[in-house]
Length: 296
Image (cartoon, rainbow, N blue to C red; front, top):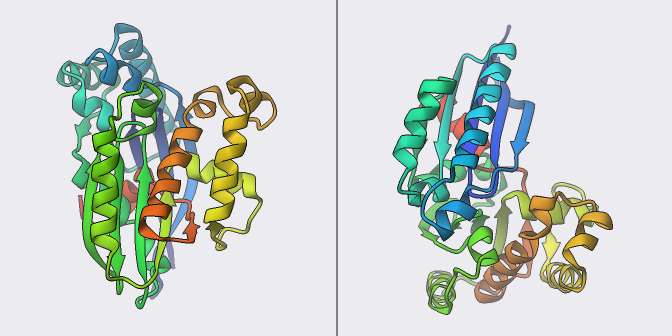
């Protein structure tokens, strides 16, 4: 006997907003299957407002309301039973965030919760990571967003430590990440990974997914430090326009991908990792799974 539940997750990030609609297939005696039914990404760069002037602009509030109305309609069409909408770094820092949340509830009938970095990391970690984690190995999970980057260390299948830093791609784009933050990240990674013989990175976020796609590798295969390093040099050698025309990147990906690559590269260097695995997971996947298992 098969039962299908329709769940949806809305991820309001600093670089873009996403709606993920999932079919959760329940079958007697088997683990539930999470199948992506629809994924819509809207490039509304809230971080550009929040990190530079401290508030979400009128123009972007209007765009958010329109996007949320569209998300609501899509969920109706898909007959979604339950959804959750979480906002991260940009909305955490915009001083008019509460007014924006209230307006969206009123105009688009979508309830948004603004979450902190720790909860964000925990939700992402509740995805299918346990399938990847070999119990006798050590992993540094790195999730790069527009406003922040979450680092989580796993060893022997257990979470050891987790930390969120205000070093995201949109902040880097606006020269808003000071050397002291890089120093803190380096110190945290080195302190937490010392004593472990070998560390492997797990990367999450739209930019590392794009880098992985460009590599043409099979999903289970890792990318090497050498590959990430060469891609970083290659991306830096191209102009913004060339990254769009020659690599086919979206305009809102072409300017931040270099900054994201730098974060992953530094994380590999400071942890001594030679490889990075790129499972297709993110906050929206985590929301769906955490919702299904009653964790949120």
